[in-house]
Length: 152
Image (tube, rainbow, N blue to C red; front, side, top):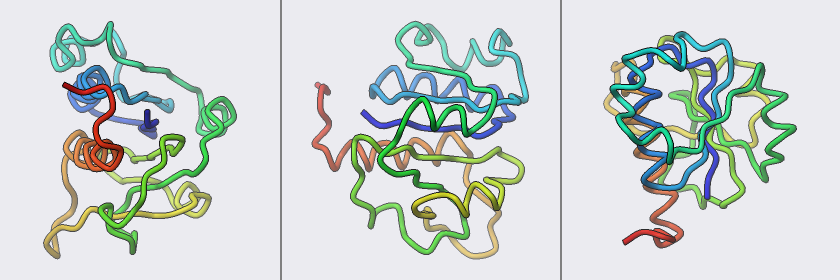
């Protein structure tokens, strides 16, 4: 299944929601420090409910350590600056899909080192979608392209 990288996530509820997405889709969730919260935080546990035991979550001190361990086929970075729509990408099961912190998105060096920068379309003059919603949109498109393996 796919790998999702959350680069320095700031809001525990988003990460908790994405732990649920991990549990119900089989994606692997990789968190890059520093985190804006503790993994024991009550808001994270509440958002993740009882799915944490089923979620595939790893934490790394930095992005390079994460990528060395994962060895993804490609790194797709998601940003409002991307020129390719998320629906125009053929997702591979060995791809890593990277999303930035809620307040600022992925830094320029991460975008520059990605194999492709991808966007989720939205109306002009809007800042961004919620992180958990953005990741969910992309995960379900990628999973759909592979005909939802393992799903009922």
